[in-house]
Length: 334
Image (tube, rainbow, N blue to C red; front, side, top):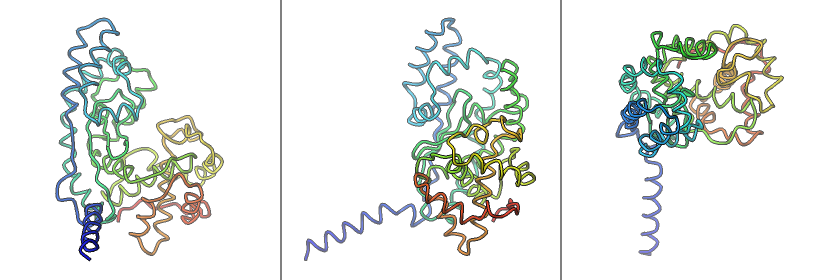
């Protein structure tokens, strides 16, 4: 009898511990770690005095990479960064780095609303799992990504504005950064952080364009429910006004594995607008949510969709009615 009572108590304690985040709001703010920022600039100063790229790479590896946080290791893994990648970017665009440097400290200050947003997220989705936010310096490939339970934010991009010097970059990159900086990334950092936080809750490898679009659209849609905002990017305004044409073109490509015309900054598509896959994914989620009578259950279904299961993805998309209706999805918070 005593053994049975002991085992019951033990199992109850384990269950309570495993669900403590879901049962109550977080008692402490999410961890935001920025230890790598100052280390980057110390390393930057050290290697700028060296002429040989091989020596620069060795110093960069020793001073920055080898001493970095788990967030830096995750960021490098997620984006394919190496010491050589960083050194190449530093050597090619010194004016960029020198102009961005004074603004990087502003990144931490721009996350002041994150605690409040995550409390709201937890209210909407009580099963929310914690994640650690890392502020990192990357090599100009990503403003935000995730790996496992880590939100990884690229401060060297987020801190930019119209005065950031991109003159040493190819014209293609200059156009990209001009558009990106015009969206006010520093002012929208809390929104980006929530978007990436959504990704830490999702599961399953995406094998098709459709699955990847829903994955990104879910992050946009849930982040809007949490913050009341959407990013000030071209696909947000372009998508609804060209919905029928986008829908038809996307249907042609959606079962394939080529994301290049629809996601991750390419304008090589018939519309000349980046990231329209995000719009399609958002529109699917909006349709699903609007049809649902239980809104909290709808958000839960989005966040727990298994992207490795093509049948589950198809069922979710079919339930949205997006490809059956020509009505434009509404962009609204609530």
